[in-house]
Amino acid sequence: MTRGGGSAARKAAVPAGRIEIDVVIDRIGSAGDGVARRENEPLHVARTLPGEHVNARIEAEGPRGARGRLMEVLQPSPARVAAPCPHFDAFCGGCALQHWDDAAYAAWKRGLVAAALERAGFARPNVGDLARTPAHARRRMDLAVQREDGGIRLGLHQAHGKEIIDLAACTVMHPALFALVAPLRATLSSLSALRSTGSVVVNLVDNGADMLIRTDGPLVSTDRIKLAAFAAAHGVPRIAWSLGDGPSEPAALNAAPRVVFSGHRVEPPAGAFLQASAEGEAAIVAAVMAGLPDRLTGKSRAMELFAGCGTISFAVAARLRVLAFEGDAGAAAAVRRAQAGSRVEMTQRDLVRQPLSAKAFSGAAVVILDPPYAGASLQMPLIVASDVKRVIYVSCNPGALARDAALLCAAGFVLISAVPIDQFLWSAHVECVAVFDRRAKI
Image 1 (cartoon, one colour):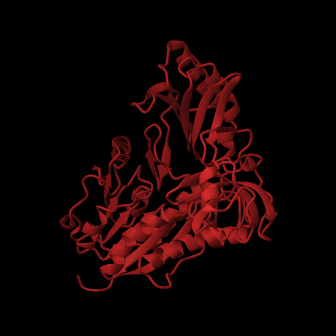
Image 2 (cartoon, one colour):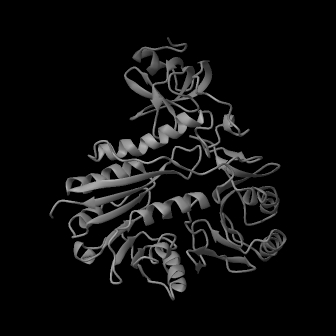
Image 3 (cartoon, one colour):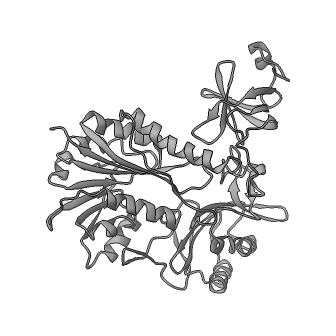
């Protein structure tokens, strides 16, 4: 039943946004939206759950189906719960699934990993329990900034929209970070460098909140004075600044920001990629360590690709020598500064554009890779063509994992274990550490 038309002719005559339709949600899609069927095409409706009968307004049509805005839940799911965050019903883009019962939510996330490995060719994959990150634990945030009449909006973009949700609360952000939101908003509003839009990347490191502020105007001397005062008042070790996406420079520096990975102090570059929570980092490192080969000698070596700032590198170096590769110049330099006295050897190399050859892996006891969201499509065939027998793949994208792991399956690798990790609580993202071993001859 529809309220604004249902036929193809009616759909063509009425602009998107005016059609309302009653549908039953079949499943949760990969983006965390409920998915129904509309005229044999998918209709994505955020904030819905499987089995729910809802009324939605069609807002956009596309090649992969339509997107609807939830207008009313006509028949709720028994698994629907009250969302803990006041911004959830405003469609804040930080969380997609706060309205789902925890057991069903956790089973769905674990199922994303299992389904990806099944698509790769591994029947009945050995997928462990979901490793959890609690509320108020996110230590890395990328916040949008917009100047408007009356002040500054500082927060996250609305799901499927450009509007910024001005954060007055957050159920995922670490309290030490959220405590900076209000005073940072006030400081940003006084900067002449912020003309219209900007962003703030914050990493909660061991000695405070490390910030990278991007603005759409140049930073003047009075702006630097204000940022220095903010940093001093709130114990911020460093505030870096950049004009748009340009190179960053220090705007206020009280101390070198630091993180300690397995006893090694690393000074990350501004805006560095760090694991989003301490719990997620610990789960990833533990799963990688558990997946290392049993028989190692003093001459054994690991090849680590997309090594970042050394989160995994220094842990693995306690067991064997690590040849690490990372494309980001700042991250690679940070590891090199910290690698003295360890068995880590860092090389800067863009593996997306210049993957390692199959010969480069000769004799390696294990290959560990933690690629970006798009995966490692150019590197995987060369790993498969090498003589490596153990591969540990740290994935943040089940789709890329399915594609890349399919090559391992076709080459005779078996899946030893897979640990799903819910590092981004209540989002549609799930991570996984999958361990593969080659049992067939090359």
